[in-house]
Image 1 (spheres, one colour):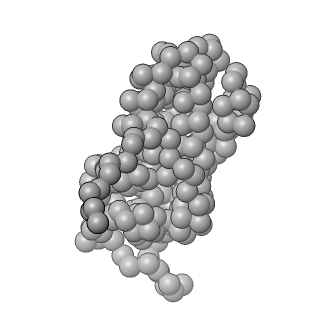
Image 2: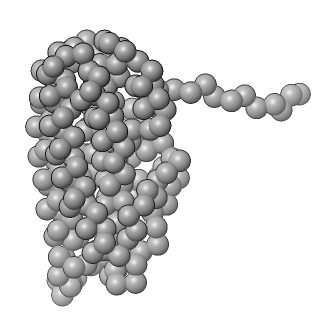
Length: 210
């Protein structure tokens, strides 16, 4: 019996992962990817009314969310940069430019949040196929595509990013402990919902996402 292994052909788009995985927000462990060790000042999840202020206390949920959202935005920015320059439709380019500015501004809040939590500003999920994360394979496919094919790749890729990042942010709102993280998560959800609504009306969206 042959035990030779076959390399899997590269894919440009991941299958949709069951939403329950995202809602858990222990998603790093569920996906076989660990978050970094919690810093010393982080308190255990609070279970009593006499708990410390949520504005300064963190739970593993807070850490998992912040450590996922930061690289998600960073990777999405690369795709948005391409789309702002290469999308065939002016409305797509304008949408990509606006979204790039918004997600860059979010990073300006996420990175200081990581610092306040004592967490490194590094991609702890590197090498793992996280839902909603724009991968190097996605970017390579986008760079190789032209015209309507590029537009389709952009629309499907950024739609997945917006949907999944909104879903994990909703989990942070309901399960997180830090007030600053929950406030930022709420802002991200509002921005994602507005972007998704706009995305549905963009040229080519009905065909690409239908």
